[in-house]
Every structure is written in structure tokens, then in C-alpha cells.
Image: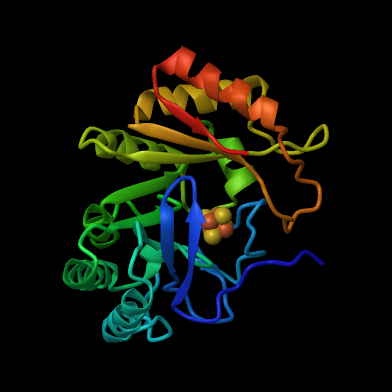
Length: 264
Ligand code: SF4
């Protein structure tokens, strides 16, 4: 059984990464349950427990998410403990924008950041499935670093690799990402996936060409391109070798003009 990641609370890290520097992680998902709009074949958090694209109870809210006040208190304490952060990043074991009060949570994080560490950037790592909805989008727009996932440029590969919640389709996401990129600063995160013959992949053939075309259409500020780096819930997923990641990064830039930062 792979050692999969599940965070015990709201705050984790900080961790140092090439992408973000010293980054404090913020997990808005319920403890012990992975709640996401995707169930990616490569997800290091394991299988999605609740595959949903909106979180609502009969009052329009999910009480299983931490309150804004709770997040604010935990962030305040963490920023006092870790004084030299480069980033505060909403990620965790699932999709952070599913939090029903995501804009309010981000606003609280901005206020804590401004008071204690004004140089730190607020970031969000998202599947991008909720960007067409006003409230998740408002929260994303409040973040300094908007890192949106894009693993496929065609519907079949999107469904096979990201395995989204019912009724989630690629085209509306691509259209919104394209608009979002025009505001400047959009970061696309793409995980290269390979597999044995007949299994989903996005590194060659029609799937690869569609992915490159989608990146060209969206035209983000930069693409972060990376292979899997931990065990995956689907044992057939193969790690794309570093030299192939480098070659695919160069090809994207050559075909689209979009800068790519490859990661090992
Ligand atoms: S979007 Fe992220 S958290 Fe959700 S299944 Fe995919 S890799 Fe895991």
C-alpha cells in the first residue's frame, strides 16, 4: 500500500520548494477525508473519498470545513512561529476552492499576512474545476499566485487521467483559463503521466498534441511541468523520465511560445 499523504490539520510545513521557496501549506479539507473535484490517477493523497464539484448542505454550507475564524487563528499562530515565509499556499488533501467560504478564507489569510509577513505571497493550487463559478473564482482572484491544473487538451484524456466529478467537462475550464490568463500571471501546472499500452497517458501522440494545443490556447504566463514523484494510487502509472520532461518542456515552448519550468 503506497504511503499516501493526509494532513492532520489546517497548517502543514513549511516546506522548501523550487517553485515557491519556503511555503506554508494550508489544508482546508476535512481531516481524514480527501474531498476533491478530481480523482487523479497519480494523486499522492490517494483515492478521493468525496468526488464533488460543489460543497453544500441544506443551508448552503458544509460544516465539515474549518471556519474562517479557525483558519485565521491557526494561520496567525503559524506565521508567528515561522517568520521568514516566501509563500502561504492553499492546497492540502483535496480541492481548496471547494470550501464554501473560500473568498472569506483567502481574505482572512491576506489580513494575517499583511499584519505579520507582508512580503509572503498567498498562493492556491487548484484543479481549476470551479473557476467558472463566482465564489470560488473570487477567492482565486484574491490570491497572488494562481496555480491551475491542466493535464489534458482533449475530453477523453481529461476524463481518464483526472477522473473529475460527474458533469465536469474540459471545454468550459479551458475557456475560463484562457480568459483568466489575459489578466496576467496565470501559472499552469501539468503532470506528465505515462502508462503501459492502452492505459491513459499525456506524453505522446494525439493526447500530447491536444495538450500542447490547449496550453497554446490558454497562453499562461508559465507552465510548471513535472512527473509524478511519489507512489500513486493507480499502480500502473509510470514516472516520465527527467530527460523526457526536459524535452517536452522545450517542445511546448517551441510550439506555443509559452515559457515552461520543468521539474524533476
Ligand atoms: S486535483 Fe490534486 S488533490 Fe485532487 S485528485 Fe488531483 S492531484 Fe489529488
